[in-house]
Length: 83
Image (cartoon, rainbow, N blue to C red; front, side):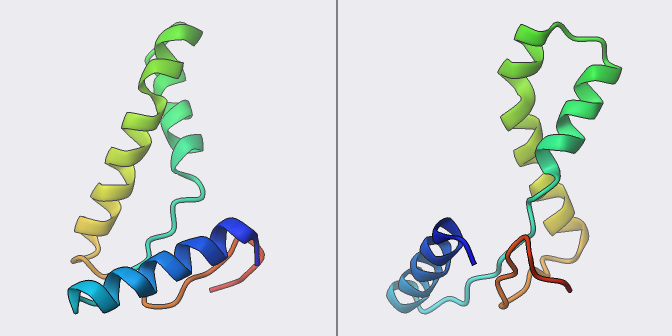
């Protein structure tokens, strides 16, 4: 597991302990790739794609979470893990 993944888990545990609310994790590994694909199909310039990529990736992530009925996972999976 990467250091960044460990940081995310540690932060999630801290946040849950402070708020008393369970933390869901949502897989976001491919949202930037999907966003890039959508922006390329829209024929945006490199500069415009770069300006919008992270915003669109965040929208894709949120949409996936909401469409799942707000069912993330309590289990954190790293890129090397399988579901």
